Image 1 (cartoon, rainbow, N blue to C red):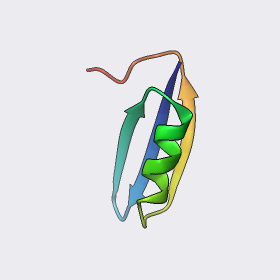
Image 2: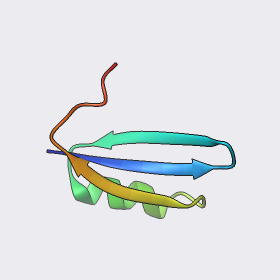
Image 3: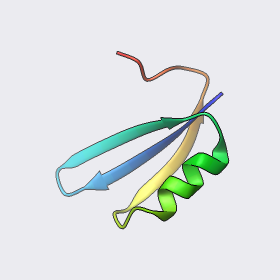
Image 4: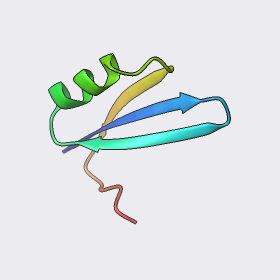
Length: 46
């Protein structure tokens, strides 16, 4: 399972993939922009 942090900045959306929920939560705490954390079994690799 992967944890995804999605950060919303004006007209841009950034998505970051983390191995653990704790890593995603820590990254979310360090951003000032609105954001959400979700989880998936899929990879974000292009």
